[in-house]
Length: 402
Image (cartoon, rainbow, N blue to C red; front, side, top):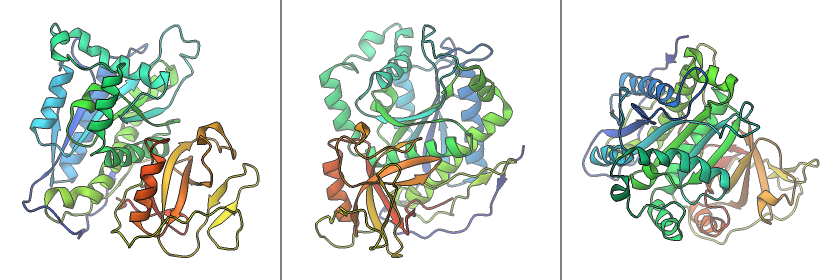
């Protein structure tokens, strides 16, 4: 199949950076050399990740001249974890994308059926499943002879490391989550991967990098159907397209701020199957004054802002005012949650909207970004991966669409 690239237009954004520079993205193909990563029946993690990263890098280099691509590896070699982070830091990277393939233990009865994409940002593990994935990806440390000294002080199971994770992620968490959400949407919409969500865990490469960073688990190689897709040309093209379109949205949103100059609008690509990515959440609008958050606490349609979902008891966001509204998105699920579901942690006034083949849940209706930011601080105590979305007439409008 052939991917088509639309003609670029010029984007004008306020610029707050004095000196102009290229936007630098570091692409990290997981594992390599003596480290095969997760094993399938016919292929392995290191082979698939390298192929996907090479294709992604080539797309960026061919179509986005203002972007410099840095690879942690562009061939089948073993690169220690600390060197991967060092490569990104030394290059002055503005975004770090680490690509991996998931798997579960051979004793797991669901091994041949489990499927889906996960995208991680740095943070506490939260669940045993997140911890298991982090341990598997971090275990490459043990292949290095001096790993005890090299990674001294890094213990993803300790309370001290949890505190370090929280401190180190604060500055870049918002942008990491925004990009992770865009990648997840694309892998679901374009590549047809089952949605398993945006999560947090203690990965070394995310902890040690100094820029917004995500780790992508494309699918489960232990599932024969998923392995076939991961190894196929068509499957890889769809996954690369998902990653590329998400990157374009991120570049459109933050590129001019980072580089200090106006950049051409990065355009999404469409594969031969006609699939094209969707946009994701970002915070672009300037503050519009200060006031206390006004929660909507009824289920009436009269204000034109919400419609009642009688089956699930939650309200679907349906604002017909034509004016921007800000919400704090707390989580997403493939099936519609019911009011009072444990996943909502007792939070009242939760609403939902449909996006990326998923139901996405948000709280608060604010007229300004400042109001939403104050609410975000409160909500993150229970939902660390929550972020602000801007909507008009019930649709997200805050990422600059590629």
